[in-house]
Image 1 (cartoon, rainbow, N blue to C red):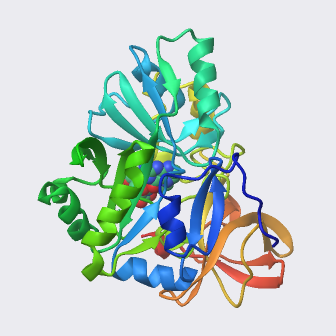
Image 2 (image 1 turned 90 degrees about the horizontal axis):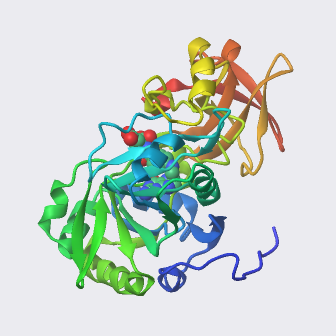
Image 3 (image 1 turned 135 degrees about the horizontal axis):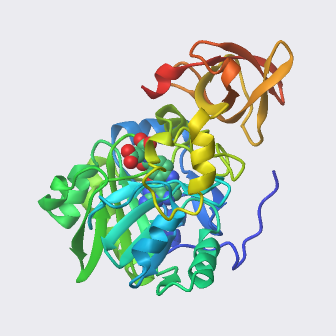
Length: 366
Ligand code: THG
């Protein structure tokens, strides 16, 4: 592919200078912002992520902030996950749906207080939908995108590196919880979360100007830990079953089809705009659903959907795929019709390079 042009619409991040100095080799665009995809090679990055610690510029995980007396009400309008038990300091993975039950995003929500929330969004313009609801329902809430940029620290040595910069108390942060930690006089939310299964943290860096000082502090503190710049890794996230909105599911899919039924409590999520639609489809259950799939042989990069076939008839599609060094096969994510979604079902997949054998392989994600 030819080089993609740089411009203001493709926003840089507070960490872009550090990312470039670290030798970034590829980018994607996510929420109209640069997101690194490779530093050394995807395979070398993968092995390093699983054995050391990486600092990731995930500023493209933009925050939609809700502030005001109606913030909690608006938040519940967005998601079929029941938020009544959620406490300040918690993060929830929340499917966001429209009035048809179609997925608009799959963010992490942070409850800062009853009347202040951050929605850490995946790649869709959720701000517009949220602003529209707030305006249309005349809610008493401010909706905007604050100058907050997540920086992830991921990998087996993440606790050690974070403790050196923020103090030993970060070790006590529990999974999907956050606390407030000081960096050079600025208080920042630090959560135990991140788009990998290797463990780690996300620092919600407050203020563009604080980005590079924190970047440098992490690299200075982690020299002997072999800390490197990294990024969400395609292979590792497929192995771990972490979904990518826009790739693995879109507005065409319900949360149940996306395998996110466990994050829905539609019956009690009173006020969710997609509630009626989801109650209807949740009753019988989905007729297609996301599955882990292994693919034999050599495959090209997956830059489009690949049809899944049974006896030549389409029964689904592959939405993400990559060769896994540790699993010794190509790992993939696909949407499969219920007639063919049972574990160990063997199908054909039509890649741009020809037919390959594909097997539904539930054990990847267990
Ligand atoms: N962190 C933050 N914001 C984000 C992401 C993130 N915004 C964009 C994108 N990632 C949103 N998508 C996901 C997908 C998966 C997870 C988080 C965000 C995730 N899932 C865990 C899992 O499935 O194992 C845990 C879910 C749970 O148990 O609650 O972490 O990564 N800030």
